[in-house]
Image (cartoon, rainbow, N blue to C red; front, top):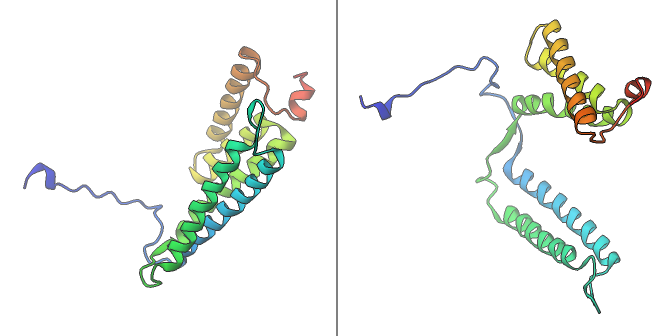
Length: 180
């Protein structure tokens, strides 16, 4: 047997089950994403049209180039919708299974909560909670290691960004209590 024919198989005990039922297929995902992009393109196009898409005495107005980029985005997205509807239903394959979606949501939901918590707690406190929770719940790492790592990371980031480089980051009540 040649070296190029050697296959290494590694079992992943946390891998999603192979027999998990499908949640949606690629056709539905393509149509939904294309329609979201059309909505974005229409929103951007309207806003840039409102700003101004003509030429004045000094050249193009502020919305000229972004407006035409949104027109291109809308056209490409409509092509995506059309292409998805013209493909055969039988040719569409599973986009995501229930087990795969569960794994994606295990990352997406805490990240979304992190973004919301940043508005109220500030970046550093929210980062502490996100890192500690991910390490503990997803990585199954000991609680003391999770808390220590989260604390050290956020402390180093605070010193780096707020003290050393004086970068303005979202602050919360804890930073305000310490005078930052």
